[in-house]
Amino acid sequence: MGKKSSRAIEFPMPEDKKPRPTRRPNYRKLAALSSLGLMLPSSIAVGLFLGYFLDKLLKTDPWLLIIFTLLGVASGFLSLFRGLKKFGLDKDDEL
Image (cartoon, rainbow, N blue to C red; front, side, top):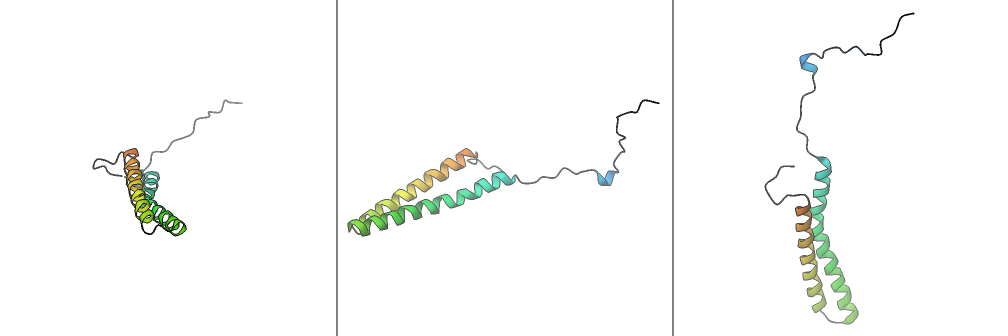
């Protein structure tokens, strides 16, 4: 009995069937960046609702609403800038 070769036979691919290098977007990065778009409005909404609730509870209309809304805006921008810095998008980069 003869020795069998474990090598696979490779056939050359025709020119039209070779895989072409395509430039596809990085979907994980796009998904993470899409969450950045919700950071600012959600922070503002949390501050607004918290201020409204505390104003009604403590009868301090409209001071706590204004203060917590401004805190929500500041928190939203801070989160947005931190997220952009994390992904290195402070320059003109492509995805």
